[in-house]
Length: 130
Image 1 (cartoon, rainbow, N blue to C red):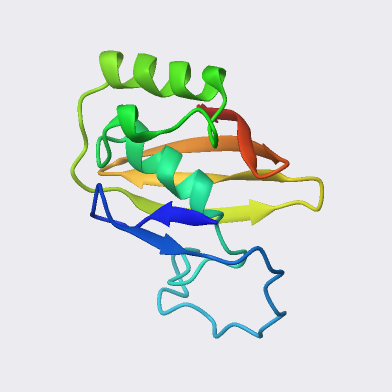
Image 2: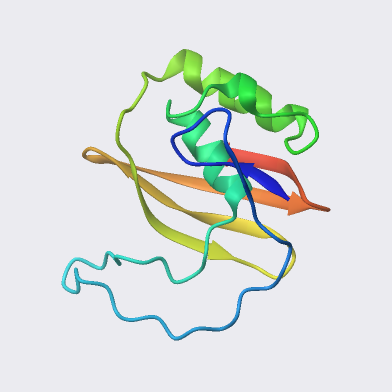
């Protein structure tokens, strides 16, 4: 499946639908703070695009109806209207469940936000920034 390349609006990267091998991950560089340099679970490209759009890195109009449900696009547009654009955010944690649920936390300056998402049949059907 093609996904937009990070930082580009018109370039896309082919990511095959395959399961990721279980690779042992090195512990993060920031041991004492509880933050990890590499998340324990890989984040889905669809969730990453939704987070980019929710925090102002991507135009919400680029989220197509083929991959993102109407409720997801509406939530992102509403969040962009009420919250200012953020030029830098960091994914602190990301977790995935076998049934297609993704959740984690994002750090924006001094604040932290939680997110929850659900992917079904290759589409992001639910996404919330809490």
